[in-house]
Length: 281
Ligand code: TA6
Image (tube, rainbow, N blue to C red; front, side, top):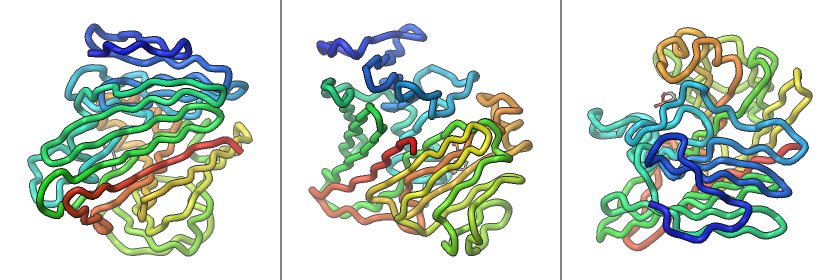
């Protein structure tokens, strides 16, 4: 599956036979990226704790998205707009991609992955160093315009979700997806005292403040009209086989997204970019 010379900072492992994972060890950070789904599973800047949450019950087999890290949800977000039989969050997070490039320099490691999905050609660039930058570039190779939505569905680790908050969403309109979808407006910082599943109309950066560990994570984005914030809380977590029941307390998803209500039309031969950059303040 991988027949490319890798830089010294990258080594290839297989947690399961036939399931390649790239282990990054660099002076700026360590990280792990699976070929399956071009899925960033871990990123730890040197001198800091792990920034991403990865479920200890994650399943490493073809066809099953990894629970945690940064799932690449594309070319649609959540349920397919027309065909409910299709998997939630698109097809490419459940497939092996191809490694197109691997390089390293003083600032970090760059991995480039590619996948073909029907009329779409997508590439994912992972730049891991003092910051983590993930960029999805998708090109419409058909002769007709195509609607696209999606998300870089980032699971950020927190010490205790009840003592975490998301800033820079004040006064922002959002769709509350818990129960019957409803339109609301954010008042102040977003805090967590129950299930949260919100699609904010925002192109702005956010921060995740973890008061227990005194850590602030900056989440910037590009090509993303929607910021999705999700925590399943008790009941939804208990219903997920690949997530320990109590682990809802240990993560918050803050996603650079193109939600279905903001789907983009990509003209033939044109491309769409969706990117997120994560850094510690
Ligand atoms: O991004 C939020 C969301 O769409 C939630 O509604 C929930 O379904 C979450 O994604 C996780 O979806 P998954 O298919 O990965 O279990």
